[in-house]
Structures are given as structure tokens and as C-alpha cells.
Image (cartoon, rainbow, N blue to C red; front, top):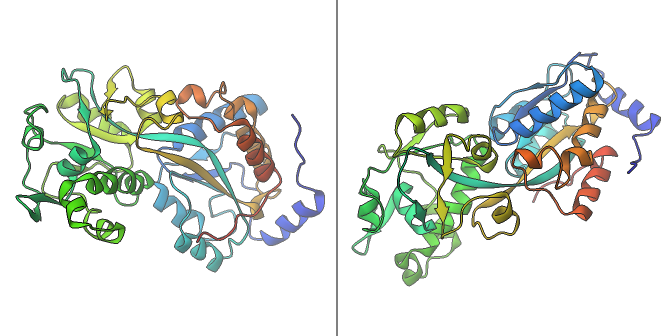
Length: 345
């Protein structure tokens, strides 16, 4: 399969718009801890194939990556940022204010938001979204009142659940994984509560009252390093971790997924949407850095290759749920030709 490359005139315009950018040897990439292992795999493949310096890939979290990426144009600024959610309108505006006015958006595939426990945990965990919300939400309904969360054990929420302390390690507010978990698990779980349904509360009420994670101990912010969560789960088999499926996939020798509504997180259940909490994964590239930062265009070609992105590609082997062929071809065309994204609504 062949793709149209950026024309010489387009590259010249990019170079002019990035006059501050010198010939930095390595491509610099920041962003989501969930997208990190995929980008790192592409970086290694690119370096092995070409002999070029391997791009520097940093796990800064989605929000932190956007702040770095949108800081400006030039060699001191990152070329690409990974994101486990779409760029926000406020982030796009920050980019525009700092001269990052030409950005290509790449939706590379899908990922499930996984709850996981150590393989030493002997329980067969199967939770509903409402049980997840009641365990981790800052406020919950108790005896018809909306109160600070009193639950300390899973069995207090549902007597059929294990009689163990609630303890979940999860991402900080700067993480796109946290944003997605709040929207897809916490809001959806809150919406399922009889208290909320009987009161007829709408989406605005849910967003205002069901977005906060509890801060009294059962939920612990574990930072952007998912490896630390694995270490903590191994130290306490009753603890749970919250992260993208790709990370669970890479640690299946140590961890097992928690079922939600009877469905395990797998590439198949994420792809067919039977697993209830999944999200798209992105990266964003500064088009002004193309043709200025050495090897950036070639790296993007590797990232957009069928070898990387197809259903049997090496990223799928690491847990990425691939796009359908027609969507993948649209993505490849847009990224390789430097199509500018539209402003988010």
C-alpha cells in the first residue's frame, strides 16, 4: 500500500514555520501512560529498521503531555504527544496561543479500562458499574440520603462480594485514564443507582455529584507509573489496580482482570463492545516539525504502517484493539499527508 508523502513545498512551509527548531537528533514524544507502550514499541521497531536514533518517549500523563506539547514550536518542545482521550478545546486553544497552529490527530485504536488484581487473589471478581461507583465514589446514597461514602468493605455494598477491605490504586487527575474512568465507569455506575433513577437526576447532576473519587483511603492515587501499581498489587493480593488494558495485557503473568457485568477485559470483548468501559487512543503531531526534526516523517510512516496498526500488527500483539480497515486507511492518509485537525467543540 502506498501513500502520498508531504510535498517539497509543504515541507518548506513547515520548516519556515518552525524556524526555532534546530536539527535535534532524537524525536521527542510525551503523553499518556496508556499510549506509551505502543509508541515505545514503534520507536524500537523504527530504530531497528532504520538505524536512526530511537525517539525519546516519556510517560507524562495525557494532561501533562498536552501542556508540554502545546508549549510552543521549536527544538525545546515535544514533537508528538500520546493521549488516552481526545484533545480538549481548552488544550487546543493553549496550542493556538503558543503558535502550535497546525496539528494532525491520529486515533490509533481502542483500549479497555481495566480493573485488575494479583493472580494470588483467590476470588472470582465480577462487579457491576454501580458497585464500582459505590466503592470508589466520594459520595453515595445510603438510606435515601446522599452522603459521604461510608463503605470500607466490598461485602457492605453487596453481601455476595468478598468480605475484604476496599483498596484501589488508580491514576491521578492529570491522567487521561482518570478522565475516561470517571466518565465511562463512575458516571455510568452512578446513573445505574436506584436513588439516581428514582430522583430523575440528569446528566448535569451526575457530572456535578458523581465525578469525585473518594479521598478517605480506599482509593489511592498512584501516579503515572503503572509499574508501581503492579508492585502494590503483588504486595497486597486484595488490592485492585485501574489502568488501560494494554498494561494488563503486558502483565498477565502477574495480574488477572476483574469481570464487569460478567465480561472479562480482552481484545475481543473490547472490540465488540461487550466489555463496558473502553475508549479510543490518540496521538497528536506538530506538522511544523515535519521536515525539520530529523526522521520525524519516517517515524510517522512506521507508526502508520499496516505492520504496526493492522489487526495482526505488532501493536495488536501488545493489546491494542485495531481500527477497521477503512478507518485505518483514512487515518494513514490523514497523518501521512499532514491533515490539520479541526478545533474540538
